[in-house]
Amino acid sequence: MSLLDKYLTPEVEQQLKGLTTSHGVTLDDIIRSGRENPESSIGVYAGDAEAYTLFAPLFDPIIEDYHQHSLKEVHPRDFDPAHLSVTNLDPSGERIRSTRIRVGRNAAAYAFPPAISKEDRLELTQKVVAALESLEGDLAGTYYPLEGMDKATQDQLIADHFLFKEGDKYLESAGINRDWPEGRGIFHSADKKFLVWVNEEDGLRIISMEMGADLESIFDRLSRAASAIQEKIPFAYDEHRGYLTSCPTNLGTGLRASYMAALPKLSQQPDFKETCKSLGLQARGIHGEHSESEGGMFDISPTQRLGLTEVEAVQKLHDGMKKLFELEDELAEAA
Ligand code: ADP
Ligand code: CIR
Image (cartoon, rainbow, N blue to C red; front, side):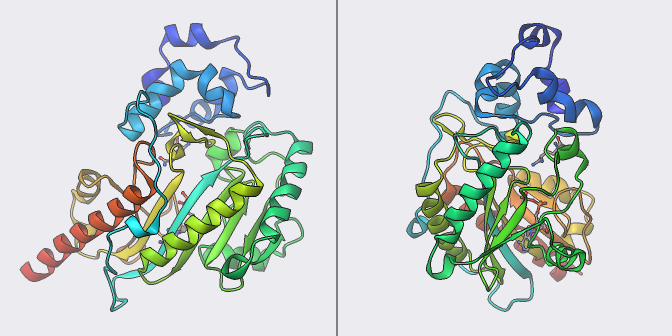
């Protein structure tokens, strides 16, 4: 049962139908993805910042349930790499193939991808690209629009985990893929350790990733990038909901930190998903959400993004992964 089905009671529906945000977002828009895809786990998307407050009787319980956090609290922030207490969990390079941290962001002055107009999307793209092209040092890079990119290049970027996939059915139903591929693209540094997805599920997905397991340097790069971009593009933010994103699962830090890690024995256990869940972690397949694993390799990341700081979210990945490796080692020793 999706969180939409759990919380859209007849009373809430009655209360919210007929309401419209200044960008024209209605209850039907918010719930279309969940209605068209009944197997959704969440089922709702916000077309603009106002949707979160105007439709709070639906969004708030969904947010509190997913993040296991009360919206009465002010969302805390700490993006200071010096506050991390992590070690490289795999200096040998045998268990962790790569590490990635991304944050989702939307410009405060525009609707979010589910509701942005074609004209506004193009205007926003110009501003975002100009901001990205002004970055310096290891954050300097080039913008590659999806429009005009040859299919082989696009496919290779997707296969190498650098670029978003195309045609996600949940995003399609939410209206996020309108006018595709216009205004969509990827900015990246020459070494592809710093990347920004433009106008996919969120206006910006700011990404830091590299081979190996050096969380500290990846977090440091992301922290610098997010604040440099924010100086040029003010982001939608709310004291209690943190950074505002299209999908309520990404509110708060907007941050998903993940290790691409091998757990060949543990992942064979029938309670593998439960074990991850007990540590606040989620296991995705090797090509992102809704993909399959290959060879015992999983994309492991914490589920909660709201109500904890950026530092705490990354620490949670590190500490949880350490525990998963201990369990993997116990199984290997018992064999
Ligand atoms: P998001 O990270 O924005 O939630 P996805 O789950 O679709 O979106 O993942 C996007 C891409 O990032 C996919 O290609 C996925 O395999 C890749 N990815 C995630 N974590 C890692 C990692 N630690 N190393 C390499 N690629 C990763
Ligand atoms: C769903 O509701 O299943 C899709 N709209 C995807 C939700 C986002 N994913 C997640 O749980 N982090």
